[in-house]
Image (cartoon, rainbow, N blue to C red; front, side, top):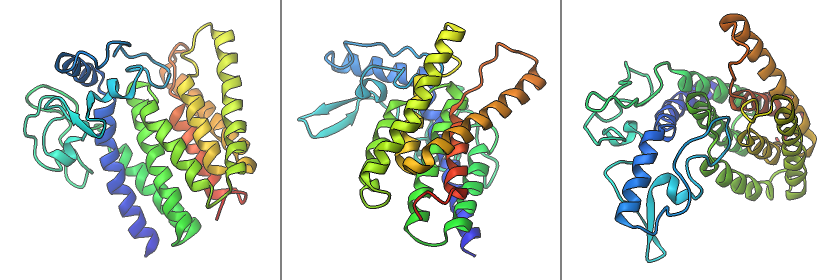
Amino acid sequence: MLIALWAVLGFLIGGFASGFASTLADRRHFSALADESRRTNPQVGRRGSTSGTDAGTGDSLGEKPHELIGVVAEGGSKLIIMTRRSLLPSALTGRCHNCGAKVGLLAAGPAVVRPLEWCASCGTRLREPWPLGEVAGALSFGLLAWSFGLGWPLALYSAFAAMLILISLIDLRARLILDVLSYPSMAAALVVSYFTIGLESALKGGLVAGGSLLFIYLLSVVIYRRGDAFGLGDVKLGLLIGLVVGSEAALPAVVYGILVGGVVGLVVLVIRRDRKMAVPYGPSLAIGALLTILFNPAVWR
């Protein structure tokens, strides 16, 4: 019963994650947000660009978080969105996140009914066309409930899985792993580790996983003479994974992620027959992390 209920919860969360991913991956949307913020408050976004770059390079839509999300601080305490556009997906607001047109509440939410993929007014994609978020959420949440049962480990790892799903969907859509998601998740992982695996184990795990992926990133730059084979955003994701799983499980998580990425890359090569096509590594690292949490006895339980 718990497995079924938790899988349904994962299905719903995965659906909303798909809507959030479409919003956060919309580069035109964030360019417009930053432009409107600068017009409203010239001091916002003077330094840095809103142009995007590929390969999961992290905060590639702006140098500062407030440039990315198009908000300004008023009185040092109040954040105000300076436009009708919103960071919230249409699944929560009932409006297109780009033009503000009404699309109906939950229209782009979980695919319980046929979801609305495009805004009829401006043509902005409101969510992914396939229920990938829903399937990933139901599967990961169901497996976590099967492995851990009801308790704090299930709640914490489910929250981590939800963040991994969101990061993976954005990486698949826009080839970006955003710092605005990675850094707060790292901070939360460090705080939680104090009560679970211990701060020392978390830091060692982050060092092992992040360091291993940093070495792979530098190696890919040397071999391919460019950073689109493996990005710094992937390194930061590895650091986050290491902080969550701890020192003893960090290296297996990286190895699982690399193996999954290799299999995916081989399948894409066979199907597409395009050796120059770069495959996002974020989802593979996320799958490796979940496999480690599910089947490695070294993780906190």
